Image (cartoon, helix red, strand yellow):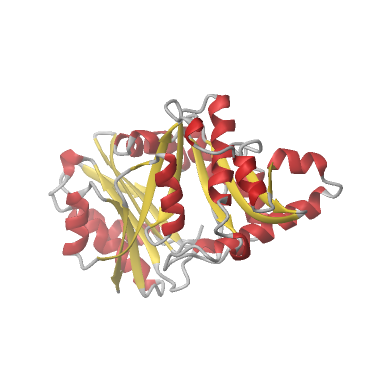
Length: 337
Protein backbone atom coordinates (compact mmCIF):
# COMPACT_ATOMS: atom_id res chain seq x y z
CA UNK A 1 0.00 0.00 0.00
CA UNK A 2 1.43 3.39 -0.96
CA UNK A 3 2.91 5.13 2.09
CA UNK A 4 5.86 7.14 3.34
CA UNK A 5 6.49 5.28 6.58
CA UNK A 6 10.26 5.97 6.88
CA UNK A 7 9.67 9.73 6.69
CA UNK A 8 7.00 9.60 9.39
CA UNK A 9 9.18 7.44 11.65
CA UNK A 10 12.12 9.82 11.24
CA UNK A 11 9.92 12.75 12.16
CA UNK A 12 8.68 11.12 15.38
CA UNK A 13 11.65 9.06 16.62
CA UNK A 14 13.80 11.95 17.98
CA UNK A 15 10.88 13.11 20.16
CA UNK A 16 10.28 9.77 21.90
CA UNK A 17 11.37 9.00 25.49
CA UNK A 18 14.51 6.97 26.05
CA UNK A 19 13.90 3.27 25.49
CA UNK A 20 10.88 3.73 23.20
CA UNK A 21 11.22 2.69 19.56
CA UNK A 22 8.95 3.23 16.60
CA UNK A 23 8.63 1.32 13.35
CA UNK A 24 6.21 0.33 10.62
CA UNK A 25 3.49 -2.17 11.51
CA UNK A 26 4.37 -5.54 9.94
CA UNK A 27 2.02 -8.48 9.23
CA UNK A 28 3.62 -10.54 12.00
CA UNK A 29 2.60 -7.85 14.49
CA UNK A 30 -1.09 -8.62 14.06
CA UNK A 31 -1.49 -11.06 17.02
CA UNK A 32 0.07 -8.54 19.42
CA UNK A 33 -1.90 -5.67 17.91
CA UNK A 34 -5.16 -7.60 18.40
CA UNK A 35 -4.28 -8.35 22.02
CA UNK A 36 -3.34 -4.72 22.64
CA UNK A 37 -6.49 -3.32 21.06
CA UNK A 38 -8.70 -5.81 22.91
CA UNK A 39 -7.16 -4.68 26.19
CA UNK A 40 -8.73 -1.27 25.66
CA UNK A 41 -11.98 -2.39 24.01
CA UNK A 42 -15.39 -2.90 25.54
CA UNK A 43 -16.03 -6.64 26.17
CA UNK A 44 -18.59 -7.03 23.38
CA UNK A 45 -16.31 -5.34 20.85
CA UNK A 46 -13.21 -7.47 21.29
CA UNK A 47 -12.12 -9.35 18.19
CA UNK A 48 -10.32 -12.58 17.51
CA UNK A 49 -7.14 -12.84 15.47
CA UNK A 50 -9.19 -14.55 12.77
CA UNK A 51 -11.57 -11.61 12.58
CA UNK A 52 -8.70 -9.16 12.18
CA UNK A 53 -6.95 -11.33 9.59
CA UNK A 54 -10.16 -11.36 7.54
CA UNK A 55 -10.46 -7.56 7.63
CA UNK A 56 -6.79 -7.22 6.75
CA UNK A 57 -7.27 -9.47 3.73
CA UNK A 58 -10.04 -7.20 2.44
CA UNK A 59 -8.11 -3.92 2.70
CA UNK A 60 -8.01 -1.70 -0.36
CA UNK A 61 -4.55 -2.19 -1.96
CA UNK A 62 -4.70 1.36 -3.31
CA UNK A 63 -5.30 3.05 0.04
CA UNK A 64 -2.62 5.58 0.96
CA UNK A 65 -1.82 4.98 4.60
CA UNK A 66 0.80 4.61 7.28
CA UNK A 67 0.59 2.29 10.30
CA UNK A 68 3.01 2.29 13.21
CA UNK A 69 3.84 0.33 16.36
CA UNK A 70 5.58 1.62 19.49
CA UNK A 71 7.72 -0.71 21.57
CA UNK A 72 9.68 -0.64 24.82
CA UNK A 73 11.90 -3.56 25.86
CA UNK A 74 10.23 -5.67 23.19
CA UNK A 75 6.70 -4.99 24.48
CA UNK A 76 4.13 -3.30 22.28
CA UNK A 77 3.04 -0.08 24.01
CA UNK A 78 1.17 1.75 21.25
CA UNK A 79 -0.33 1.64 17.77
CA UNK A 80 -1.16 4.48 15.42
CA UNK A 81 -1.99 5.22 11.84
CA UNK A 82 -3.51 7.47 9.21
CA UNK A 83 -5.09 6.73 5.86
CA UNK A 84 -7.25 8.13 3.09
CA UNK A 85 -9.78 5.30 3.41
CA UNK A 86 -9.22 3.97 -0.08
CA UNK A 87 -12.55 3.07 -1.64
CA UNK A 88 -14.24 4.01 1.65
CA UNK A 89 -12.95 7.60 1.64
CA UNK A 90 -15.62 10.10 2.78
CA UNK A 91 -17.03 12.50 0.15
CA UNK A 92 -15.24 15.50 1.67
CA UNK A 93 -11.84 13.84 1.18
CA UNK A 94 -10.99 13.76 4.89
CA UNK A 95 -8.50 11.22 6.19
CA UNK A 96 -8.86 9.05 9.27
CA UNK A 97 -6.25 9.07 12.03
CA UNK A 98 -6.04 6.80 15.05
CA UNK A 99 -3.76 6.48 18.02
CA UNK A 100 -3.67 4.39 21.18
CA UNK A 101 -0.91 4.37 23.78
CA UNK A 102 -0.54 2.15 26.82
CA UNK A 103 -1.82 4.00 29.89
CA UNK A 104 1.59 3.77 31.58
CA UNK A 105 3.18 5.72 28.72
CA UNK A 106 0.70 8.57 28.44
CA UNK A 107 1.60 12.18 29.23
CA UNK A 108 5.19 11.74 28.09
CA UNK A 109 4.89 13.64 24.82
CA UNK A 110 4.42 10.51 22.71
CA UNK A 111 0.85 11.24 21.69
CA UNK A 112 1.65 14.79 20.63
CA UNK A 113 4.62 13.70 18.53
CA UNK A 114 2.60 10.94 16.86
CA UNK A 115 -0.43 13.14 16.18
CA UNK A 116 1.66 15.93 14.68
CA UNK A 117 3.38 13.54 12.29
CA UNK A 118 0.21 11.74 11.25
CA UNK A 119 -1.61 15.00 10.57
CA UNK A 120 1.39 16.25 8.59
CA UNK A 121 1.44 13.03 6.58
CA UNK A 122 -2.27 13.43 5.74
CA UNK A 123 -1.87 17.10 4.83
CA UNK A 124 1.13 16.33 2.63
CA UNK A 125 -1.07 13.97 0.63
CA UNK A 126 -3.74 16.59 0.09
CA UNK A 127 -6.15 15.85 2.93
CA UNK A 128 -8.28 18.93 3.73
CA UNK A 129 -9.10 17.58 7.16
CA UNK A 130 -8.64 14.57 9.44
CA UNK A 131 -11.20 12.70 11.52
CA UNK A 132 -10.95 10.48 14.57
CA UNK A 133 -13.44 8.35 16.47
CA UNK A 134 -13.37 8.28 20.27
CA UNK A 135 -15.55 6.42 22.75
CA UNK A 136 -17.67 8.61 24.95
CA UNK A 137 -16.12 7.14 28.10
CA UNK A 138 -12.56 8.00 27.01
CA UNK A 139 -12.46 11.50 28.42
CA UNK A 140 -8.68 11.80 28.32
CA UNK A 141 -8.67 11.00 24.60
CA UNK A 142 -11.45 13.48 23.91
CA UNK A 143 -9.62 16.20 25.84
CA UNK A 144 -6.38 15.41 23.95
CA UNK A 145 -8.17 15.72 20.60
CA UNK A 146 -9.90 18.95 21.58
CA UNK A 147 -6.57 20.45 22.63
CA UNK A 148 -5.25 19.66 19.15
CA UNK A 149 -8.15 21.46 17.46
CA UNK A 150 -10.55 18.59 16.85
CA UNK A 151 -14.26 19.29 17.28
CA UNK A 152 -17.19 16.90 17.42
CA UNK A 153 -19.28 16.77 14.26
CA UNK A 154 -21.29 13.55 14.60
CA UNK A 155 -22.08 10.61 16.87
CA UNK A 156 -22.83 6.96 16.33
CA UNK A 157 -24.44 4.66 18.84
CA UNK A 158 -23.48 1.01 19.21
CA UNK A 159 -25.90 -1.07 21.27
CA UNK A 160 -26.15 -4.73 22.24
CA UNK A 161 -29.10 -6.98 22.95
CA UNK A 162 -28.67 -9.77 25.50
CA UNK A 163 -30.39 -12.64 23.71
CA UNK A 164 -30.27 -14.86 26.80
CA UNK A 165 -32.78 -12.48 28.41
CA UNK A 166 -34.82 -11.57 25.33
CA UNK A 167 -38.55 -12.30 25.66
CA UNK A 168 -40.12 -12.62 22.22
CA UNK A 169 -43.60 -13.02 23.75
CA UNK A 170 -43.68 -9.22 24.27
CA UNK A 171 -43.98 -8.79 20.51
CA UNK A 172 -46.31 -9.79 17.74
CA UNK A 173 -45.05 -12.58 15.48
CA UNK A 174 -42.76 -11.06 12.82
CA UNK A 175 -44.57 -12.74 9.92
CA UNK A 176 -47.88 -11.32 11.16
CA UNK A 177 -46.41 -7.81 11.32
CA UNK A 178 -45.24 -8.08 7.71
CA UNK A 179 -48.41 -9.69 6.39
CA UNK A 180 -50.64 -7.00 7.86
CA UNK A 181 -49.09 -4.51 5.44
CA UNK A 182 -49.10 -6.87 2.48
CA UNK A 183 -45.48 -7.98 2.82
CA UNK A 184 -43.67 -11.20 3.63
CA UNK A 185 -40.35 -12.14 5.21
CA UNK A 186 -37.73 -14.57 3.92
CA UNK A 187 -34.22 -15.41 4.97
CA UNK A 188 -31.27 -15.11 2.64
CA UNK A 189 -30.92 -18.88 2.75
CA UNK A 190 -34.56 -19.38 1.72
CA UNK A 191 -34.35 -16.91 -1.17
CA UNK A 192 -31.17 -18.48 -2.51
CA UNK A 193 -32.67 -21.97 -2.29
CA UNK A 194 -35.73 -20.88 -4.27
CA UNK A 195 -33.94 -18.70 -6.84
CA UNK A 196 -34.07 -19.69 -10.49
CA UNK A 197 -31.17 -17.31 -11.18
CA UNK A 198 -28.88 -17.00 -8.16
CA UNK A 199 -26.65 -14.35 -9.74
CA UNK A 200 -29.62 -12.15 -10.64
CA UNK A 201 -30.84 -12.45 -7.05
CA UNK A 202 -27.46 -11.31 -5.74
CA UNK A 203 -27.63 -8.23 -7.97
CA UNK A 204 -31.13 -7.44 -6.70
CA UNK A 205 -29.83 -7.69 -3.14
CA UNK A 206 -27.03 -5.31 -4.01
CA UNK A 207 -29.51 -2.86 -5.57
CA UNK A 208 -31.57 -2.89 -2.36
CA UNK A 209 -28.49 -2.43 -0.18
CA UNK A 210 -27.37 0.51 -2.34
CA UNK A 211 -30.76 2.23 -2.11
CA UNK A 212 -30.95 1.90 1.68
CA UNK A 213 -27.26 2.81 2.15
CA UNK A 214 -27.88 6.18 0.51
CA UNK A 215 -30.51 7.00 3.13
CA UNK A 216 -28.19 6.57 6.13
CA UNK A 217 -28.19 9.97 7.92
CA UNK A 218 -24.48 10.54 8.39
CA UNK A 219 -22.33 13.43 7.12
CA UNK A 220 -19.38 11.24 6.14
CA UNK A 221 -20.85 8.18 4.44
CA UNK A 222 -18.75 7.02 1.45
CA UNK A 223 -20.29 5.82 -1.81
CA UNK A 224 -22.23 2.55 -1.53
CA UNK A 225 -20.15 -0.61 -1.87
CA UNK A 226 -19.81 -1.99 -5.36
CA UNK A 227 -21.42 -5.34 -6.13
CA UNK A 228 -18.05 -7.09 -5.81
CA UNK A 229 -17.24 -5.40 -2.50
CA UNK A 230 -20.62 -6.15 -0.95
CA UNK A 231 -20.35 -9.79 -1.88
CA UNK A 232 -16.81 -9.99 -0.50
CA UNK A 233 -17.41 -8.06 2.71
CA UNK A 234 -20.85 -9.45 3.51
CA UNK A 235 -22.64 -12.19 1.58
CA UNK A 236 -19.53 -14.27 0.81
CA UNK A 237 -17.85 -13.65 4.17
CA UNK A 238 -17.21 -16.72 6.36
CA UNK A 239 -18.96 -14.92 9.24
CA UNK A 240 -22.11 -14.11 7.24
CA UNK A 241 -25.32 -15.54 8.77
CA UNK A 242 -27.65 -16.51 5.87
CA UNK A 243 -30.45 -17.81 8.11
CA UNK A 244 -30.60 -14.68 10.26
CA UNK A 245 -30.14 -12.25 7.37
CA UNK A 246 -33.75 -11.39 6.57
CA UNK A 247 -35.49 -9.68 3.66
CA UNK A 248 -38.91 -8.09 3.39
CA UNK A 249 -40.72 -8.57 0.09
CA UNK A 250 -43.86 -7.32 -1.60
CA UNK A 251 -44.62 -10.04 -4.06
CA UNK A 252 -41.18 -10.77 -5.49
CA UNK A 253 -39.82 -7.25 -4.97
CA UNK A 254 -37.13 -6.86 -2.30
CA UNK A 255 -38.07 -3.85 -0.16
CA UNK A 256 -36.10 -4.31 3.08
CA UNK A 257 -33.20 -6.17 4.63
CA UNK A 258 -31.37 -6.75 7.87
CA UNK A 259 -27.85 -8.04 7.24
CA UNK A 260 -26.55 -10.28 10.04
CA UNK A 261 -23.08 -11.58 10.88
CA UNK A 262 -21.57 -13.65 13.73
CA UNK A 263 -17.89 -12.99 14.39
CA UNK A 264 -15.20 -15.31 15.68
CA UNK A 265 -16.13 -14.49 19.28
CA UNK A 266 -19.68 -15.66 18.67
CA UNK A 267 -21.14 -12.15 18.81
CA UNK A 268 -23.89 -11.31 16.36
CA UNK A 269 -23.99 -7.98 14.58
CA UNK A 270 -26.26 -6.13 12.16
CA UNK A 271 -24.31 -4.30 9.47
CA UNK A 272 -27.39 -2.81 7.83
CA UNK A 273 -31.12 -2.68 8.46
CA UNK A 274 -32.97 -0.69 5.84
CA UNK A 275 -36.35 -0.39 4.15
CA UNK A 276 -37.19 1.36 0.88
CA UNK A 277 -39.01 4.66 1.39
CA UNK A 278 -42.30 3.42 -0.07
CA UNK A 279 -42.44 0.53 2.43
CA UNK A 280 -41.60 2.43 5.60
CA UNK A 281 -43.96 2.89 8.49
CA UNK A 282 -45.21 -0.71 8.27
CA UNK A 283 -43.09 -2.19 11.07
CA UNK A 284 -40.87 -4.10 8.65
CA UNK A 285 -37.58 -3.16 10.35
CA UNK A 286 -38.94 -4.47 13.66
CA UNK A 287 -40.27 -7.62 12.00
CA UNK A 288 -37.00 -8.39 10.24
CA UNK A 289 -34.96 -7.90 13.41
CA UNK A 290 -37.35 -10.11 15.39
CA UNK A 291 -36.86 -12.85 12.81
CA UNK A 292 -33.06 -12.44 12.99
CA UNK A 293 -33.13 -12.47 16.80
CA UNK A 294 -35.08 -15.73 16.82
CA UNK A 295 -32.58 -17.43 14.51
CA UNK A 296 -29.53 -16.19 16.41
CA UNK A 297 -30.98 -17.10 19.79
CA UNK A 298 -31.67 -20.66 18.61
CA UNK A 299 -28.11 -20.80 17.28
CA UNK A 300 -26.84 -19.97 20.77
CA UNK A 301 -25.65 -16.41 20.12
CA UNK A 302 -25.80 -14.42 23.35
CA UNK A 303 -25.07 -10.86 22.22
CA UNK A 304 -26.49 -9.14 19.14
CA UNK A 305 -25.08 -5.72 18.29
CA UNK A 306 -25.85 -2.86 15.97
CA UNK A 307 -24.55 0.67 15.28
CA UNK A 308 -26.75 3.61 14.32
CA UNK A 309 -26.14 7.25 13.55
CA UNK A 310 -27.53 9.61 16.17
CA UNK A 311 -29.96 11.09 13.63
CA UNK A 312 -31.42 7.73 12.62
CA UNK A 313 -34.37 8.15 14.97
CA UNK A 314 -36.61 5.40 13.48
CA UNK A 315 -33.98 2.67 13.92
CA UNK A 316 -32.97 3.92 17.36
CA UNK A 317 -36.62 3.65 18.37
CA UNK A 318 -36.84 0.08 17.03
CA UNK A 319 -33.75 -0.85 19.03
CA UNK A 320 -35.17 0.78 22.16
CA UNK A 321 -38.36 -1.28 21.84
CA UNK A 322 -36.34 -4.47 21.46
CA UNK A 323 -34.30 -3.68 24.58
CA UNK A 324 -30.86 -2.93 23.16
CA UNK A 325 -28.48 -1.53 25.79
CA UNK A 326 -26.34 1.36 24.48
CA UNK A 327 -22.57 1.36 24.77
CA UNK A 328 -20.72 4.66 25.20
CA UNK A 329 -21.24 6.60 21.94
CA UNK A 330 -18.64 6.79 19.20
CA UNK A 331 -17.85 10.50 18.97
CA UNK A 332 -16.68 11.60 15.56
CA UNK A 333 -14.25 14.52 15.69
CA UNK A 334 -12.70 16.51 12.86
CA UNK A 335 -9.80 18.92 12.43
CA UNK A 336 -9.29 21.19 9.43
CA UNK A 337 -5.70 21.09 8.20
